[in-house]
Image (cartoon, rainbow, N blue to C red):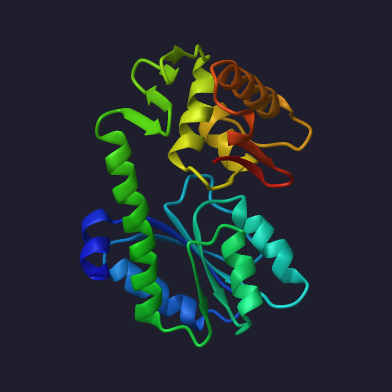
Length: 230
């Protein structure tokens, strides 16, 4: 199944490995064999300046694990490869936003299959959501081409930036989207910790939705991470 998916979609994949590159080299070769656009980076290298479809990354053990998971959560959807066999470590990776977690020894074909399944799931959701250009989550309705927003029958007037912010969050309901990701997608600029512009846009969207009858707690701030529409 994963061979057909990769060959058809030819996704862009970033593979982030440890100093021991033996498994990474095998994974890169197999992904390229199926037509994927693969970029391999080291543990200290920055992410490429583009939106990857998938990031496959080793996660170290010990104190570096938390820092690495926090960094991964700010990039793009990722699959975590871990030496640790502990359930608590796998849960931590999933809570950080991992699509999936594999513990060593990692089987090459299983890694590729799980990556394809994660991408196929997101791809299918995107097709469904974008097929009509409309999105409905409970009593919230949005239409992308006209930037129309309604809560029940109450019209909500949003600026283009506010609309794109809400659209992205609503598309990924119950998932925390990181500030760096939202800055790239919505504000079209890099995230800096002292820039509060996204916070202000989110606050205004929350107030406008609340005025129309949508509980303000539906737009949640995940402190230190980003925002989530629930």
